[in-house]
Amino acid sequence: MIALAPVPIIGLASGRFLTWIEPKYRGIRETVSRLNSRLENNLGGARVIKTFNRYEFELDRVSDQSDHYHDEKVGAIKIRRAFFSGLRIITGLVFVAMLWVVGSDIITGSSSALEAGVVATFFMLLRRLYAPMRRVGKTANKYQLAKSSSERVFGILGHEPEVTSPEDAYVPESVEGHVEFDDVTFSYEENETILNGVDLDVAAGETVGLAGTTGAGKSTLLKLLPRFYDVDDGAVRVDGVDVREWDLPHLREHVGIVEQNPYMFSGTAEENIAYGDLSVLSGDDESVSDAVVDAAKAAEAHEFITDLPEGYDTEIGERGVKLSGGQRQRLAIARALLNDPEIVILDEATSDVDTETEEQIQQSLDRLTADRTAFVIAHRLSTIKDADRIVVMEEGQVAETGSHDELLRADGDYASLWAMQAGGSVSGAATADD
Ligand SMILES: Nc1ncnc2c1ncn2[C@@H]1O[C@H](COP(=O)(O)OP(=O)(O)OP(=O)(O)O)[C@@H](O)[C@H]1O
Image (tube, rainbow, N blue to C red; front, side, top):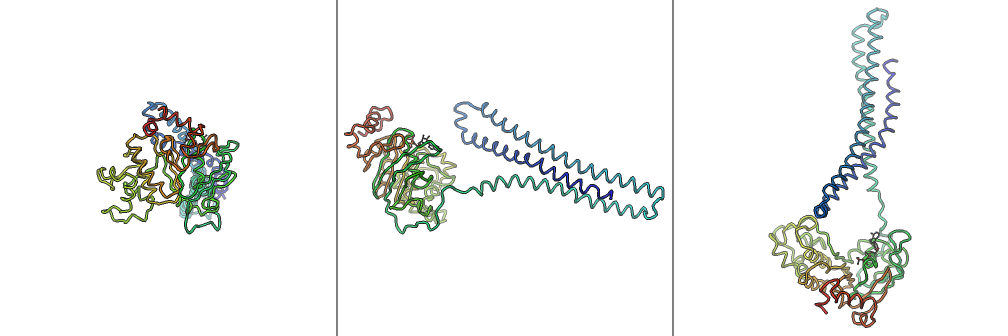
């Protein structure tokens, strides 16, 4: 009975231990993830930190997070140490008590059943009984540690995407590229309407330029087309079918996007262009795919790529850090050309580049938008001057539509934006162009 006395005590203590250690382990996971994201931010924003000389500030913020992590970790270690030491003390004390009782029995000869050899064997077996009992505690500890880690992992894995394909999704045999925004209302946050009743019918093959003051909702409107978000009210239709009824991968395959600051993966120039259509990669390291070269030529990117140290095989580094903004844009246009979508979205593709680069990008854009439905958001109005139609957005609504000449004659928002740019307050490009 003395030998078995620790069993219920260890069982109870293990139960208490689990409830004490659980919040500590969860705290450790949370603080370490905050510390990691702070470090990642610092690495990603290293240039901004250097520019503003914010070493000390960032060091303090990292130290703060590091201290929180340290405190949580030390808290867990204290509980763990108390628990495991407690287990050893309990089993040790029982061992001593057993020695005392049995030993004195043998010495005094009061128990005829106990011989020294039997007692020695009994104590050896007792050690074998206590070792797994202590292991129960260790297993409980590992279980709790794994539980708090897996809660975080499965929390992410189990996250349901808000935008998914419906059952019996629409899969088109061919796509024309007719796009309708029908009374579209949208907000990112509740009660903060960003788009308010936008109506826009764009024929297949038409090029629409979007203009308007910053924050008017131009980018947001176009994010609804490949379903990065869903409308709150109204509908976005492609070829007469609501995008929410489309098979999502098919929809996105037919909508190409060139962002102002396109993302480049670490890898070669060829691989980054081929991302638009991975089937063109032959797997042969020696030769460059003809389709990639054709796309690069159409995007005015071939020349600078062949000037790179290893041409198309040059590693352009994580996020394309070895390329200029204009070069990255042309690679992104080549990537989109290779995918050959029926609908393209170009978001402010010509801002922030010099005049020569702008001309090259303009040429590649013209090739990209030809024979496709195209939406071009541009801060430099010269980029969209020749669009079939220009849509001016203000405060989440369509304020004006028409051709460049019609809008100038109407003397509204577009005319004043144009006059402002021609006056050189935004960029000199419009002046030169006009
Ligand atoms: N992911 C987001 N979450 C919450 N609000 C957002 C998000 N993206 C944009 N907004 C808000 O939506 C409004 C419209 O932004 P949007 O980027 O569509 O404007 P824009 O007309 O394209 O502006 P710009 O010409 O400066 O790019 C802005 O007030 C912006 O703060």
